[in-house]
Image (cartoon, rainbow, N blue to C red):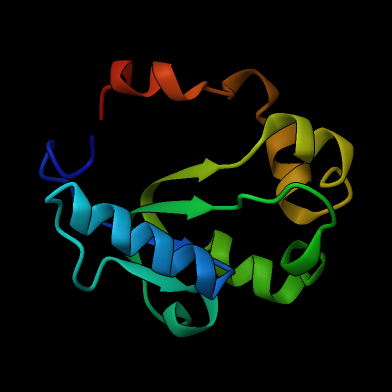
Length: 121
């Protein structure tokens, strides 16, 4: 969606394994992948117009418990941000995190994956 709209974006994830999987998915789908996906620590000090944040978790908070690092992740965008996560996980385990507080504030802005194509940038 962002690439098709010719928007400047980067993808950030706290987890190196996710970063590798995302890069592999971009490559396999013939999408621009070089210099697109970073872990949070390697992207510190950088910013981009749009940031896609991958927070795919299923159990404990992990990285999300670290407010300093989460703050770095949430403050990298200039124009917009997409947070990819499970609403159920955030309601259950992530509600005490900075991201959980943010998503609670924007509770009516959850978009399911099949609705993403309808978003106009």
